[in-house]
Length: 371
Image 1 (spheres, rainbow, N blue to C red):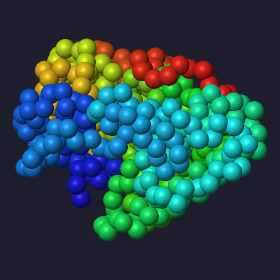
Image 2: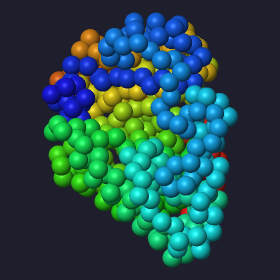
Image 3: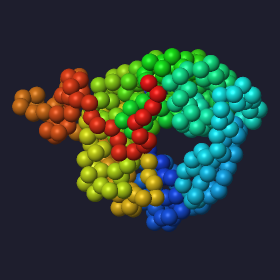
Image 4: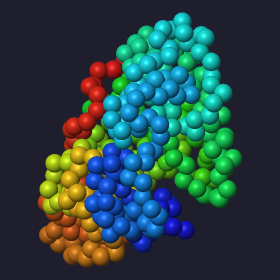
C-alpha cells in the first residue's frame, strides 16, 4: 500500500503525498532552467529519465487557434501553452436542446465533464437562466450529458487493469466566493448525476478523486455522500479553517495550494503557507495530500521554493517534535501534541468552533448566479 492509499485510508503514511503540476506555458517559457529544478526534486515530480519536449501540450486546446470538441463546443486560444476558453456554444436556445444529439465520439471525460459541460453547451448566462427558471429543457439537457458520461465512465473502468486505483474527475463547481447556483438546486439537479457517475467506480473497488476550482464548502458533504474519496479544492476559495471544519477526518484532501499567490509571494511566504496547510489540515494518521500548480507567471525562485517546502513538510509528522501540553498552542493527535504558531493555533480554534468563515479566493468569475 503506497502513501497515497494510506492517506486515504488514514493508515499513517510515511510521508504526506505531494505533487506539482507544471502548465505547458511554463515549460515553453523556462525550458532547461525549469527542467533543472524538476530534476532536483524527484520526491515531488518522480523519476526524470526521459527526454523532455518543452513545446508539448496536454491536448489540442492548448494550441493557439480554435478547436471543436466531441459535443461541438468551439474552444479558442490566443497563445500556445495557455488554457483555452469556450467561445462557441452549440445549444444557444432551449429549442436546440431537443435536437442535440449525444456524441458517438468518446472524450474520456475531460475536465468539466458535467456542470461545466452544461455551461459550455448553453453558454454561462443561458444556463444560469435555465437553473433560475427551471424549464423542462434543463433536465433534458442534464439527462443527455449524464447519459454520455455514464458511457464514458464504463469505458474508463474497462481500461483499468489493477485493483484499488484512484480514478480522476474534474469539474469546476464553484465561483470566486460562492456556488453559481444555490445548494438546493445543486442537490436537486446535479448531485444525482455525480452519484450515478461515481457509483460504478466505487462498485469496482476504486477510489474517486474529485477536483473542483472555486467555492464549494456548502456541497462538500454532498460530494462525500456521492462517493468522493479524495477532494481537490482551492485553498484560497474556501479557506483553511473552513476546509478543516468541513473535511478533516471525513474525506482525504489533496489541497490545491494557493497558485494565485505563487507569482507574488517570497520564498518565505510559500514555506509558511505550506506549513500552515499541513498543521491545519494534516494529521499523523493521514487524510492530506498537497498539490501545487505552476504557471508561466511563477518566478523560478518560487518554483524552487514550492518544491523545497513540499519536500520539507511532507515528513512533518515524522520529524516535528511533540511538546508538553502546558502553555503552548497545540493540536492533540492521539498521545502526541504538536506546537503551532499563534496564527495557526487561531485558525485551528476557529475551525473547531466554526466561528470563522474565511474570505474566498482572488481568482475566478464574479459571484452572480442562479439561486
